[in-house]
Image 1 (tube, chains in turn green, yellow):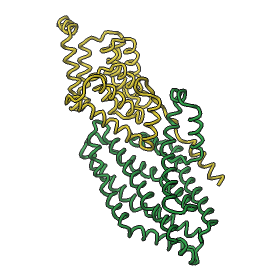
Image 2 (spheres, one colour):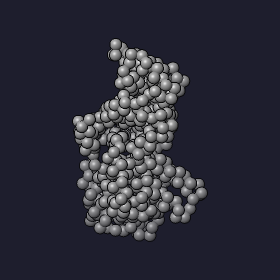
Image 3 (tube, chains in turn orange, blue):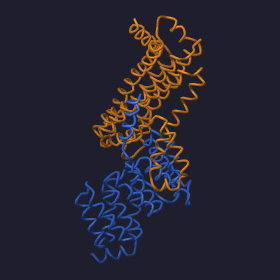
Length: 271
Length: 218
């Protein structure tokens, strides 16, 4: 019974999403974006394959960000603000079932978008390799595919953080503010800490600032994929340990955020 | 939860160390932090945008909208940003050679940028160009020989690179060597950016010492 209500709600979430005009427009957008990205890539001289991958990775970051902030966040906020969560919970449904089914449904909504974007990107790479012969390496599509799969992981973690925030939030404004704050800090702090590792920079930066950044970084998930996307864009090999570590930490962040959120949601007064 | 926290700690520890580039001049420490922070997960895109700005500066200079020292400093700044964000990007090194060295005349800065490519690219080309600039333009034969030796040691160095390195090291490189080197560079430079190399060849040919050397060899 519980399993059926879980899959039903997950499916309902996905159906609800697919009925939205924003979602349908997103499906069209992810098909077209890679082709438009060939325009800026064509402006470069030698490393055109690298630039094309940079652009495709940027497009992926862009629509994943848009999906979480403009499609997933409003749906969760609507559940809280309009009391839709309460309606579901009056049925014989456990809170964790509702919480988990919504999470899986929203993650499931990313799959058609990702599949279309990946296919369209691969076609773009093949087209570009014919149009710009000698400038696009033959194995670029492989690096592109690997990069796109890995870039998705921080956004799955961000989805977990969205559910953690939503478990205690009162509405859209609160969720958006906290989620944007987490995203900005996760985006900007890891690269700054990397730069601070350089002795020249470290010697000229206030120790208080370094300590503050280090402390904030320890409490925040490390959601950056910068080094991975940089190496893959240049077709440089990734260390298998590094990839495994990257995948393991992001999936663990997702699980940790989801579990903490579920515990908080169970204790939440919904009346 | 503890297991998950341990997996996260392990995952973080597996991420590779980053090698950094730092130069003096307009490129300050605070600007490194700012550019890294704003580029976030997209350092490659940050470098691409910096290179687009280099094209923009070049277009303004050729159309006569920019002159004096300002554009040279802006050019240097953009190339530093590009290298700092993406040190593997070949366009940065080609534009450093063509624009920063031959157009802007910032020879020492160009050598710094080209020489800093070693830990990332492991290619002979940027080092050989740096050696050539040190020999031909700032007349620092010791630096030229050192850079040429480094270039010859790179895994992709062809026999031609070894021959250039030998000439620079033995200080036997005259203007005919310089012209031959630049003509070889034309073949690997995109058509749009060949003009500055052609100008450089013309300038060397017109030099009194070069004309004397050519006359002596006949």
